[in-house]
Length: 307
Image 1 (tube, rainbow, N blue to C red):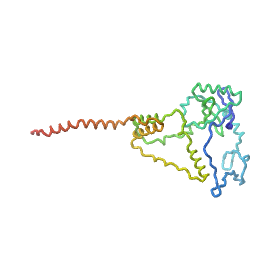
Image 2: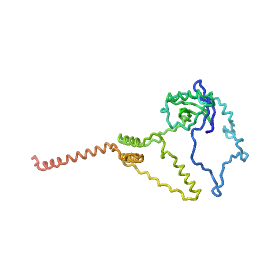
Image 3: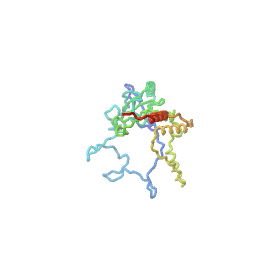
């Protein structure tokens, strides 16, 4: 059972739902500590007071805001708990909208919201059912960790999930990252769509969605622990320069189908119109060529007109 991160309530109009906030995700990556390489002694971070030049305990540490160079304003947890904000003790729902209307770049970490006791069970289930039937998500405001945040509340199964959201001014503009102006043909777009179709899936299950980095790191640790040779790393393929985009798309579709055990033979992707026009004009020139020769012979046999 994950630990409770925050206690409060969901405010939905005049309806209040007491809840616990719990982490919805967990980290399975391998963690490292810092060691002194000479003797492998553990290197730790100690908290030292600059004025007294001594290590202080956690009970002696508090929050403070540097108002000026020689003036620090101490802020306690009680001060933060008594902020003059309705969101200081409640997740206040401000409105509802379709999930598709929210840019995913604004959606962050997820948390489970659990009902706090029997009294909260009915209004909690009411909000779950109403959200599910509406096919919308709720946008809420709440205050955690010294700042007010924007959040998204949605349904996952029969449980409410709160996602932290970034404020609009926290999203950087991508305008300076845009590539130089280029033209993309309809045939190239259709080729990309064909590749997307060959790579489409129904879920995120399978070997290609496993954390292979952590597995490889565990192999290295085990090999070093037993003084065995380190596993050899495969040579990464050097990215080649794409000269013929349509040919690259066709080959990619073939490889994608082969990797899924499907027939690797693919329908010929649409060719560029320019290439088709050149080929058509070449054929037409070949057909007309004999006629040109005949005409040239007739012309050669004519006598020049007298002046």
